Image (cartoon, rainbow, N blue to C red; front, side, top):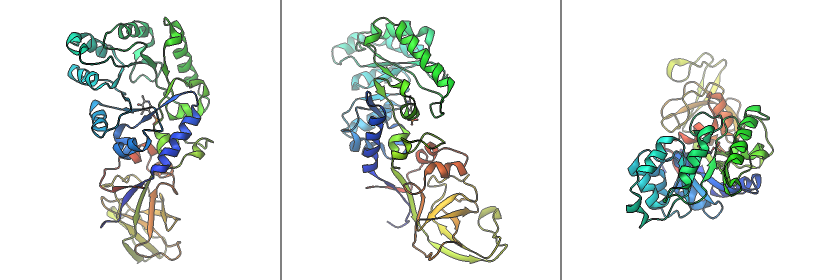
Length: 369
Ligand SMILES: *Cc1c(COP(=O)(O)O)cnc(C)c1O
């Protein structure tokens, strides 16, 4: 390696977090959500690592699903946004993917399929009917759900008993009336459907699984927690058991003493209030480190916290290491990860840990260990 910047991906931690997810939802099957290249962790390697530890994978698109199949991932794969057009739906059925139906147009697509042509060569797939209980993003209205469920149920290419699913809008908040309302709507809908005892359900994402026993369902859909990151902005006993999978690491490539009043970096937006020692680290927004990170964002240098100073540039950032003992060129830097929670860094950049890990550009090489 030349440029000493990389993301270390701890695969044992990934497996560990899957077990914590299972413990958090003991009665549920686990769908590991690996969309967006496993939240920036590398979907193929992550899926190989946990395929014997979870029951299924979920991605956002046919393309993401095919990438996994091509890489010999054999577990069932769910397309969370369903299919975007008819050829894609046909392809999804041919490949045996499981498909979310979240809108009437997707049911209309299903009705247009040349069933006879496909029926001889494929097996029916499992459909997931997503209902909108309050997220107001995807999902058929609760009032239409009985009709659409029956439509799915009667289609020759759809297996019996589609899954009824919904998504929570504020599962990261404690004791939210809104979540209780969503859960109640879902329960009422379920009970109103014929043979409801045979209808499998799926409700919780990480926040729901970790904090809402009422949202236990047949299939849980953990994403962020399997990467070892808390969905919450507050402390939580389950979050304490998770281990961060991604650590963004680098090394110091330059050190300089600056006098009081000197500025550092583009725009001269930080000035030394006293004689200071500045370390340069070769990681920047070109790698995915947020340019919005403010002065004072914590950076770990030799395991000690030091403040980011000056603007983050494309390839580099600067850290005030005046108060760190024994600092030298080549010393280890952690930008976030096992010793510095990504959520803490995210707060200083006005975002959430989800975004920081997912937006890693791949320029910083992933090293699996
Ligand atoms: C992304 C996603 C999840 C996972 O959410 P986390 O908060 O990362 O656990 C679950 N369900 C759906 C429908 C999603 O889109």
